[in-house]
Image (cartoon, rainbow, N blue to C red; front, side):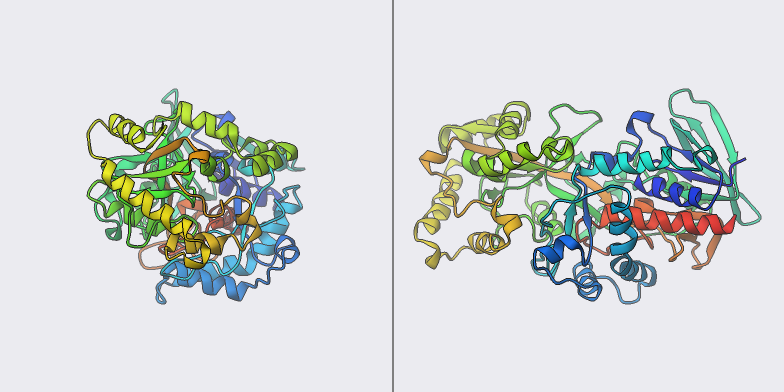
Length: 532
């Protein structure tokens, strides 16, 4: 008989299992997916991790401290001063991430790119004061494979049983304590019931269930758009949240989500509504459904991801266009995730440097030829015709597109001394940091005949992460509605809102998702091992 059941084979579940094995416990790890997908959504991710006070920061001249990071975190997330557990987890993360996430990973062979990225700098609300987004050399795939290898090579590997294709439907309770779980086989439908001294819920969030995303849509974002693409895990459906709730666990902050504004249809979809999250080029013009520039504050990525979603959702039609040219796309266009960053994923230094210096030609070719949301035109009139053909109406106005584009280009033509456009001011600002300068054009005009052809990208809201979830204390124990721990039940990772049922608040400082899974998973494993 297993002493602990871990539900979920993502990063949080794997980290919990590593801690349980280290403590000598017998562990049963249940995952709903197939063995090929062991590692969950993290395996497909870009692999950025929020870390504080690292060697990479020091070498770049960045002075960072947990105190500064916590101030940024609390301001950006707008955490409620009375929200005890999210605030406690936020403080714990910034204090402990250097040793218990970063150093712990380095000891297991995980390395990072030399220059941390500077994302979520803040717009109306202060964000990251300094760069903290550390990209794993090898992306999330390398991260997952290293941790899976640590499981397989563990001296106590004999204490671990892993079963795939197992869908947990409910938790088993006795005398107020959780004593196991019930479920069915994902493929064969065979019913199972399992017992253990403790159970760790680490099966991810609910943002792969688009109907549930709509149900919990935050009021700040108006109404849910007609089209929401799926950028989450196909099994992140909230089923385990329901099981925990039925067992008395408290669910909090379910309307706090981390979605993106620049989603496009995956050229090779593997699930319904499968979307890709673009890293939107800063030098592109972000336009509404008519081809008018969204404003008065122009939309620029890297400052406040949540606000981008809010601005698109305030439009009459809740999708958008980005207008750019080939030169901008080659230098700035990127897709989040391991799949479309093969030079980093496969750790090919020369290919990575080639793409940085000469532009990402292969990605440009692939997206313009294979993704249905990309259209290419020889001039504005040709482009607008193709945009309207794609959408199936005459919504995009050539006059509106021409007005927005010529006004922007005229600003650039006046020279930097006379730039009076917020997008250009922000481009100048981000180029001060070397990590952004190499991937950001220096005031590139859209209609420059030498930079063509023109490209328009139709973009939808794409669902990604649940910031809320199962409420936990600092030992990852699941709390009931009275704030008391439920005996035998723990939660970690996205299922627990990455800690405390929502440690980010309204907004997340990017990289704290993977980091939160690692830290909360480790804590859950340590705490569960002590309770058996």
